[in-house]
Structures are given as structure tokens and as C-alpha cells.
Length: 150
Image (tube, rainbow, N blue to C red; front, side, top):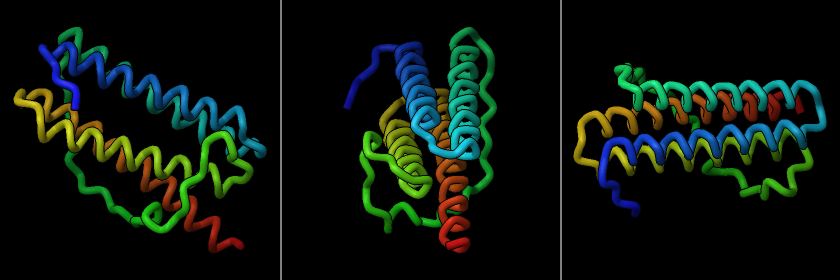
């Protein structure tokens, strides 16, 4: 696991992770077959961009206000087969890729919150994990709804 020398390095890492998420969702939006899929993925790209901007503001001195509400985990991603982002051929595939991406991001941020010493860093990583858990839940609900329709 990476070790950081400063709180700014931790923030830079988190900013880079959020930028990667923006690119990920933009790429999924480009590949989307239906306009409704494209809109959902662009919405999430915008949310990830918002997270990045929040982290930049923290780096510039703004206080970070984490949301501590508990997020339900439907665990649907535990029972789906991995889909390669290069082989997304359906809305179902896109939802699976997105669920797994959000789950991985959540786990990463939770792990990072456990290994950093700074309480500010712990708070930021826990807040980021919380946001990723909300995104995962959104995709799990969409996946469940899709299955009910079929």
C-alpha cells in the first residue's frame, strides 16, 4: 500500500482517484446504447467531478463535512459476474461494471481510512467511501429494477 508523506499527498491521491472515476463514467456514457443509460453515466461523471472539486477545496483550506448516514448494501454485486469495460454490450453489463467499480472504490477508501494516522485524512476517506457506497446502491437498485422488468 502506498505511504504518504503529507496530508496534501493524501488529498492528491484522492483527487486522482476521483478524476479516474470521472473518466470511467464518461467512457461508459460514450459506449451507452440508449440515451437514458448515457444520461445516468454522465450524471455520475458529474458527481465524481463534484467530489474532486470538494477535495480540491479541502486542499485549499475548506473544512470537509462528511455525511454519516448509513447506506444500505444490497450486495447484488456479490452475485454478478465481472464484465470487462471493453465488452459492455447491454444496460445490464454497464450496471454490473459500475456496481463493481463503486464497490472497489468504497473498499479502497475504507482501507485507506484504517491505515492513515491523521484524523482529517480518516474523515475524508470515510466520507469518500460513503459516497461510493451511495453510488453502488443506486446501481444496485437500477439493476434490481431492470431484472423486475424482464
